[in-house]
Image 1: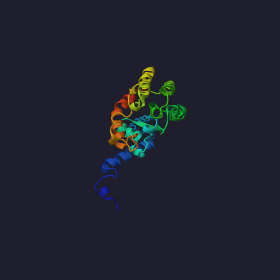
Image 2: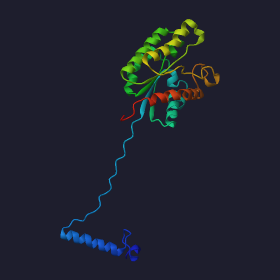
Image 3: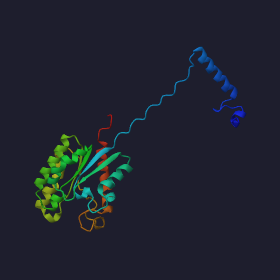
Image 4: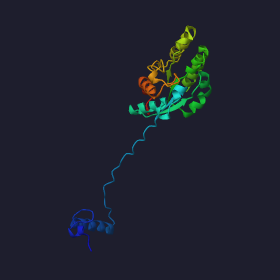
Length: 241
């Protein structure tokens, strides 16, 4: 039984049967006579360019970076990741925060953190030095060594500053508070002056321990810090540039 489409005078390919038969005869004759049939070449399509890999942003710090006391999705690096993605940045934020870490501890583990081969870094250490009353001069020396090593590897840095508690007195707070602007100037780095800006004095944004931001506090930190982070990312060399 013939297909209904053939009964209507159409070939299986949608053309008129007489035209279809005519072309078939031409092709057959060409084969018998050894004549090549010229056909149009298949259109060439350029292979899609592979997307550039995401920028790796190292968040190198202490409990504030690590997201102490919070579910992972509510911590600093996770909220920063979402905020950058929403802004259209292809970035992977690497959580290299260790709760309780000092500047000395950060310096000791820096090479381990750099094994991820980041393209840029946020450096936020010193808060635990201050809480323990450690020498601001030693903290400055440690941070200086961290920033020097990052500079040697040509990793752009945003330095995240900390402010000392006024209860420690001027003899401590003045040299401690000055170390971040001094280091930023020495290494020619952008400085975000105070990690806890807008949060430190608002009890509604702090966990019960009185020290660490809650999820809402982290959201405030990320919102305020985001322009400085995007400026850092925008300063990176573009792929192929």
